[in-house]
Length: 442
Ligand SMILES: NCCC[C@H](NC(=O)CCN)C(=O)O
Image 1 (tube, helix red, strand yellow):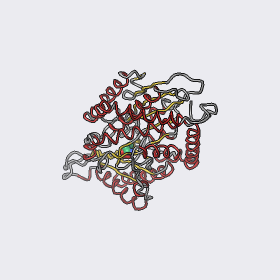
Image 2: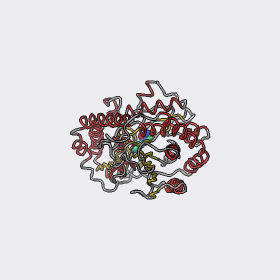
Image 3: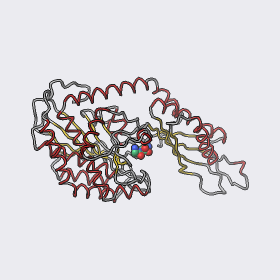
Image 4: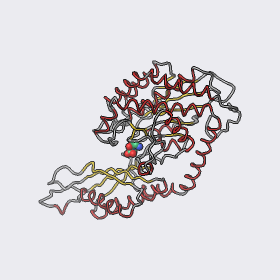
């Protein structure tokens, strides 16, 4: 049953609080019981880091884990390294409610699991096991489907966007995942991102004998980088642009005939992102004009959207987390800071969801060697499993309290409507600023 369909008849009536409490206790017990296996799973993923769309070992570990526990597994679900594992409770008269937990398991080049995606996988697996264990011990108020969706390529590419396009989220009611960070927070602003590769084509020549015969693609790259730096002065404080030079030429005595840069452009909304994209494109083109190079802009096929907050889900998560001893940050600098981007943002435009951040027992910062170490540490386990319990308990609240679900849907519709009104008319603008690129190779 999708979020747009009302479920007036579904499980209406008083909430059985003692049954709900019993189920929450069972969630904790099951997760504790499985803690050794869950730790081993997360360690195995952590020890063999794999890049986006190439997470074959992690995919095998996760699909084998679910198959061995009698979950129904679709191993290569639309993508080679995606999967879908599901369990459904006994049929009932009320319509089925479908909750999903999303796993990520890709790593970063050179750094391994410096964003702790091994722990994201562990949280969702643990939450799903806990929730199933709880529901198997009672008669839930309606039929429940639990899905664990293995979503590859968050760090690069956007596997969730591929899965959205394939219809993977169409029948889901609420989706859950959690991301490692430095603090516990039910919501931190994840912003929209557009990835672009900039290629400059010049002409090689002997750099000492007849440099005037050359067209210097490295000069274009440097100008592009500096044009962006100058643009930074006039950027909104909430915008972010960062880039690297991936190819800068081969030898000082050869005028570089080819250079390549990769930039991430970010803004809190897709509307702002379209504006930023237009300005950045002008910087890249100007560098080509100044040097006589040809430029090609290759956009990644999937932009990530900002994450839509859901205050009802966030509140339920906070209440459960507090019961488990979480101390949610009240630091405005953390709560209003931009935490990066995620393809979960696109998911929140399809179905209501929550993407809380969680402390892992370390002050280390994401995307550093120290964070890789922290994500593989024994200390992270307590916090990871606590987060899983809080997610599963929040799912129980949704299952047992139909009014909560209505309120979640209401929040989601309001947020989505607001975003859509704000974003109306941007589609063409964004398309125009990446047009002329015509890059088939990226
Ligand atoms: N090009 C996509 C980059 C995604 C990446 N994601 C994370 O770091 C996960 C935390 N939200 C990013 O740079 O934001």
